[in-house]
Structures are given as structure tokens and as C-alpha cells.
Amino acid sequence: MTNILFVCHGNICRSPMAESVFTFLVRKKGMEHEIFCASAAAHTDEIGNAPHYGTREKLRKEGIPLVPHRARLMTKADGEEFDLLIGMDEYNVRDMKRIVGEKNAHKVHLLLEYAGSARPIADPWYTGDFDETFEDVMEGCTALLDALQNKKI
Image (cartoon, rainbow, N blue to C red; front, side, top):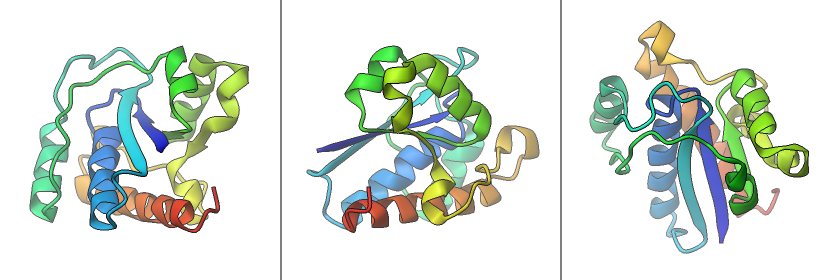
């Protein structure tokens, strides 16, 4: 079983969107017994909150079920439990490496890295553009799943 943790700043927009999209893609491929994913926050701002309305609404419009979720903080233990720690931007990656420490820093990656890009996932908290965020997340999650299927990871 490959365990993947998606992380963004508050765990209410990008990372729960990625968790829901990736779960949807994994189930579509019949790989739910091979891959598990979850999401978490790099900061405490939104702990305990449900995903942002914009995230919920965009997923609904796309026909992708929202994974039941309340924002939680990433912990050092996540570095041991998860095989891949996927951040949405370079700030998340920096914070994630600090949280998990040197021993597990090699597990930390940007989501769009799997699509051959170093760009961040667009943050709808600042832009209000959940469509752009969804496109980025879908691109990254599709590439990540392809890499896992093709044993490139």
C-alpha cells in the first residue's frame, strides 16, 4: 500500500481538493487497495474547519465526491506514516520539510513536479479562482497516478 499525504497552508482549499480528486482517480482505476491518500495543513489557521465552499462547489460541478474532511495539522509522525508528502507550493514544501525533519525530507515533493513543472498549484484563497486550481490539481494528480502505475516512483 502506498500512502500519500497532500498538504497546503490551511487544509481547506487545495489539499482537500487534491485528496478528493486523487481518491476519485484511484477508484476509477480500481487501485483503492493499493493506494491511500489523506490531506493536512502546514499551519494551524483552519484546524477543524470543513473544506472551503469554493472547493466543495467546484468538486460538485465536476462530479467528484468530496472526501469527508476536517482540516488537521501535519505532524512529524506523518513523515513516518506516509510514503509521499505532496505540497502545493514551495512554501508548503519548506514547512513540510521543517515539520518532518531531515530523516523524511526526501519524501516531500511539489504536486506539479510529477507533471514536469516546478510551478505551484494556484491558490484560490488569494485568487478566488477554483477553476484554475482544479485544473492544476487534476494535472498533478493524473501525472502522480500515472507515475505510480508505471512504477516511476
